[in-house]
Image (cartoon, rainbow, N blue to C red):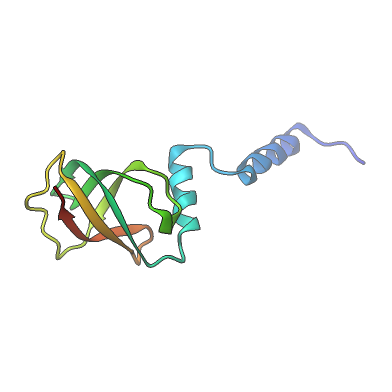
Length: 115
C-alpha cells in the first residue's frame, strides 16, 4: 500500500463522514424527505405555531406521520395556493393533508381546525 498525502486522507475522511448519514437538522429533514419520496399524500395532526401569510407558510408542531416515517417535530410547510389561511392562528389544533410538491418536499393541500 502506498503513501497517502494529508489532502487525500482528509478528503477520504470527509467522504466517509458524508456517507455515514445526515448530521445537521437540515440534513436530517432532507433525509426524511428523501426516504418518503414514494408517498404522494399523507395526513397529520398538530398545533399551529406560526402563520406567515406573505409566504403562505405555516409552522406546525405535528405528531408522528407514519406514512412518511417522520417522528413528531416542528416544521414549516408551504400552503397550496387555493387554500385559505383564515381562522388559522398560533395555538390552533389542526388536521392536515400533505401532498408531494413538484419542487420537492410536501405542501399542505387541506387543513382544518379541530377542537
